[in-house]
Image (cartoon, rainbow, N blue to C red; front, side, top):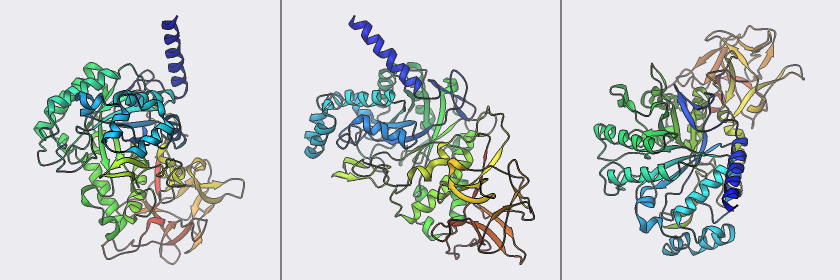
Length: 537
């Protein structure tokens, strides 16, 4: 009878998990896309990173809120999966994995955080850290959230730096044999859980030992280890230079034997390649164009050519308070790019705080989607800002024609037309977007399904939708995220949306349009509009 009840409970849990998502598991790949293995339909990964690799070896935030509440918040924020981090030593060193949660927090002197766990998740305290890790995965599955298990470090600690001895094969805390042992343990331990859809075999390879030949050898072994023990999983492989460089694959392909399960990953931040100050000190159009091209050349190219492979942007993030000018400009550029490419992505990070980081208890994570108390989004307009990149914009099986969305990444809004109010124009949440057709430079921007076009009335005046299609448009600036036309006086006017000045889209003189040098200090972000192709309604 007990055995029957266990089977029944398993069936019920799997039923509700399957019912809570619009696709089935496991996942596979088809060309550059991640797909449902059974139907071949595209599945877009829109993930958040959740740290469990730090000194406590427990998923962050369980002192702040009950586990089911934390997981529920992910769905409400638009995420469908979690990149859930782990440290090799959690699984390969018995003195780590056998620690109870209670013992782990006591040894670190985290008595206040322990009291919070007693209050919010008392059932976890007597579990080992590995049992607690599994409980979190089970709750994610129960609520229909996919899980990507990410081997973040070997020794449990903050990541990452060139000198932390965790960076590359052969480092003090990165024994390749032990790493392979850890991959094998994890792949085997979680193979009965359908919500676990992938393993990312190592985060941000880096440091002075970096070597392409060594990379080819070990990532092939790591992938084979995962695939042999759990062939249903996607195998996610990072490159070099803190997950920013796969360019060496242009010359020598990574030959694998795990078929349609290979995915590459990359990371992209304002500070990538030491460029944080550039976002403030250089013309934003310039630095945006430079970093877009670098991302194309070093990472995104794997999705192109005769044998395309999916690219998973497994980390990007910004200061969610909106106080960092460099991060703010980077984010507008990034959102335009991510929408154009319709990337699969994982944001850093869910956690609004850490139990301990840099020897500081209850450390505030300003890149955290949730606030320090894990009560609400740190950015009150979080859903609006990221709405468009949550959507699947390109479907390889779609029969709909390609159209364009007119996207304003600074606000996260889309250009829309109110058909009930004389076709007046507005910018609003991308849930209410209109669709456009644009044939290229010096052509009209037409409202799909009508004979009407975007029309400029004059400098500083609202842009209208009109039967007069005399306004022709071109994409300007190196970044390709500005749309300009010429008025009767011969001035170059750009679409411009700044809600602090006007609730309407205006046509204003293009900022820095004729001066792409660093001497142009004006910030044209309000004029960044991206024509994003989509074949999904």
